[in-house]
Length: 637
Image 1 (cartoon, one colour):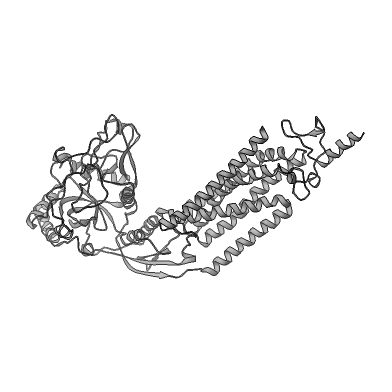
Image 2: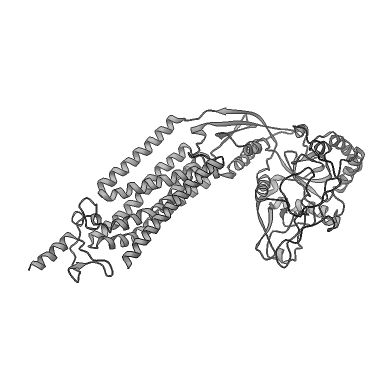
């Protein structure tokens, strides 16, 4: 029974490994056929070449740039590029002010867009929000509307009429939500009402006749006259303590800029001067809504973190509402509290109770304040999908550059090393693999074939994993990564040697092969797991602390360490279990690598039944040549 159970367990393990390999292969093929994937690993900058972008700082008036600001910008741009995986991009400075970004391969549209807009992230109060008549006329069949009815279901797709804007609301600090430490509802949209206090499920969606104006985010109104824009701007500037004469002068200037602004025109935002101390006329990302915004009140560098996901309900369980959780540093909490306190006092006077998040002179969201948030933790909700929420979270988290930059040049660059160095690296790996195979066959004879097969299985899984990760997470294989793969051959060989030597030790002690395999595995498994754990921790620390190509080496070393564990558990041990029950290996053939006589097995004195010996409970065929001869002499006597 035990023998049958062991065989079934071994076959299940091999079948599970086969499923994993087929699954990885099918995923790689599917990404290639229906996505932008490939059946070959993506190569890094040193092996494939790529695109070089030069970013030039955009200075306003007498503004200057320091070395510290440039270094901070380099760090944030690197975070943006690496947000989706190990892309192995190189980022350097040029002339003490320009930033040179080298991206391997052909960068995606999203990467180029992110690098072309590395500007200052700012929070500004909203004074005017209206539909751009030029954008409305450019839309076929589109007509400006004086309002918008909230949709019954949120939609992340922009239409000819601007969707309702997110709003700010927060549960009182004495509520169960606040007491439990759940992120307060900070920026809630009219189309996404607050979760029910009892069930945690969303309440019915708002309709055109339901909420009062103070409870619904105002829709953009048609463009107003220049005089009306000026009056509204003066009103907004007075709320932040500006002198009336100064406010009127600034309002006159920004009203003219607002009237002349055509959001639908290509490059409309390029001509806008983003002075943080002055009001700003600008457009939304949908290029259909125009704004007049107040001076900058909070800088993007005050943001501590931003993440996306499903908003938790009062009971702590996730709801169906997609949110962007936002938190500020200690230096920004007081500023954010002051802004929300002032805007909350202006409820019922839209759009003066809104504030805009501005990235590269474009409004990415303009929520309405419904609460005073004093702890610096907010939750933006609205007509989000998971993808759009993640995009906004990335903009908030990585958009806080200390100064604005513009794309100066974009050029293709050749590989730094090229195919010759790649061939040399692969040749070195092949030589190392060949030496391991030769040693295994010499030391373990036929048992060494298990080592060869295990290395082949590990190679196939590694190849497929690197290929899939290149598509899904932007991983690119550099020469440092190739080095990590070569080092992994030795790591994998160590696991086999530990296991095989444990089996041979058990055979030397007089155990039959089947029992030796199981006992040897129990002892070897602990050693293999401990060794691989040390390797993985070292790779993880190196990945977290290092930069540039060293991270590629650490990533491949960590990945292959995990694959080594997988192969040993699901292939090597099950294969040896099955081979131990064959006549060639189980009978101790001299070319099997498990010949008791060659290994110097001890002569057993534990006889059981008809001359068989072995450990209690184990199968007991003759395990050693010495014991077999002793039994034979005894029978003859």
